[in-house]
Length: 193
Image 1 (spheres, helix red, strand yellow):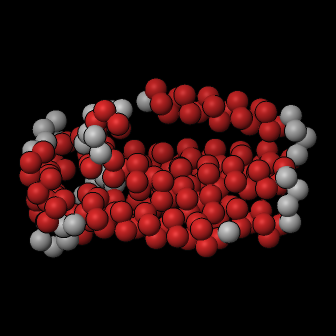
Image 2: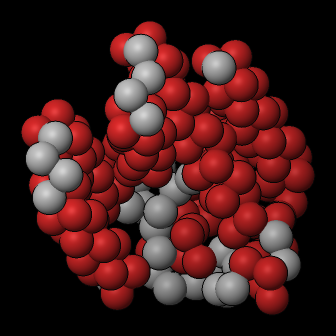
């Protein structure tokens, strides 16, 4: 919650700075982006511990949060540099795709990173009920679905069998699948340029 409030403060400060540029389109875009982030954050909170969450809904959340912010920043930079509209649009697409790739990798670190590197306890997302792509891949695999649902229920109750979670992720190739999805979005980002 502290991180969310800090982010809100930074966004509102950024909006104030953008407003001072006198470019209404930039202020409008940033205001729209802030609204998208808030809606996506609400959607993420509403989906906590929801084993029926779909990959498309997850992608919608990260598109509304990380991807929309990066897309807006890339577009704004192109606008301020006075590029042609086609370049501005390409940079918006680049930012959106890079944002999705970045968020998937960030989510992966919760499962496959090292605590010292990540800077927070591993498995924090699943413990807090935030279901990210690796867990959704496990939920969508018929061989691991029931165990994945049980793990989500455990985490809702404040317990989590980390050994079983790692086995479920390995059986469903969740980490590899999420990495492949991040790579797809990174390639789309590059292709936009």
